[in-house]
Length: 460
Ligand code: IMP
Image (cartoon, rainbow, N blue to C red; front, side, top):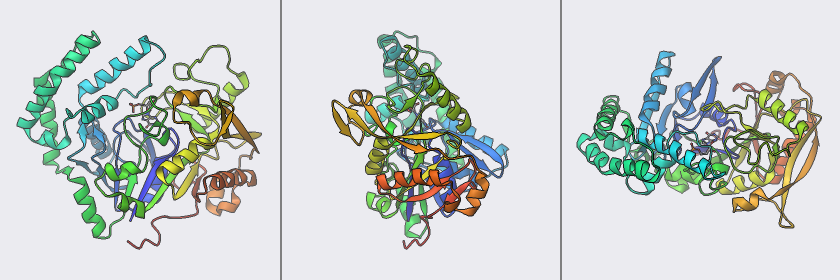
């Protein structure tokens, strides 16, 4: 069977921890979308690993696949593999031949477009600068280059000769920026042909869907590791402040080459952080305080000092700084309209709620229960982001819980969680009508109260 792990908020919910927790029983871990914009921190045997492209299951020695729905920067791929090898691991990673390749010009264009949006108003997305959007644009524009094409040097050269002059013209004629060596066909050809050779030598490419189906037919267990989160999904997120792929569960099918029935027969687990964080621009109705350069209108004198302090406290307690970029994350209260939207869009069969320890010690914990927009109460996310930015929040207030020995809680089980925290958790579970599979009470895999293991009792 399969288990799909999906971020239910803006990314950075702690999906790596859920993969780590449930991945033990999986034979293969597959990423199905995104690229090296993802940041997972995985703690294994006291060692911390920071990854941006490789599935986090790699640290645990799982066979890993980067699916056809991903965009792959070969430089990052080999850097991450070499670093893991230097640290004594023996990673097993293969890349779908149908996945698209991120080239240096994609990264340059990503930066130029952000600068242009910045100059022309408050339009920046706050991308990770990894060339993700421009690569997916080329895929949809049918001018992208796929991983499998790197292995055929003649084909690679002809593809580059077609696309690179267009990119050069875009940068020079539309944006008025001088194109550098990132737009030099000969140079690109040599570097990427070498990557192709290395992929071939190491036997790293795979026809993802065919291979996975065969493994499932043989009775193997597959875990789909989603990156980013529902609210930055290109279709279901706060467009245009989104990434360019679909972190929602439907993409586990499209991005791997397995049918939706295969994914749907398994579990789909939404990972929920007990509060909210967001990196980048765009609205955030339950935001506390704000972050310069990310929160719209930040510095206009309307900030509440107490809320700013609370946000800083939660940010520091939770280590809420970007894994990839180091940027401070924006912080807000848990937002139920977001979670209802995420649970529906991906069809969650269970949720994992983490970081409840970070909120310990607060007198009161709030949750955005619903919104008020244009005189109406709404319980899910408005489709048009402009309307979302006008929402005011109806809060539910919960008594806080004190800091306790969370390792003891993890050992003793659900009933050992402070009562007020359980009240909070049970509210979320009831509102989503989705059972809690696990509760994260600290950063390590052992700091988890497990109520349900989806791979248990598998009949497929
Ligand atoms: P891009 O994916 O680099 O194009 O960035 C688009 C938006 O998605 C920006 O707001 C990023 O901050 C956000 N984003 C991309 N990847 C992640 C992630 O792994 N965690 C959180 N936010 C992300």
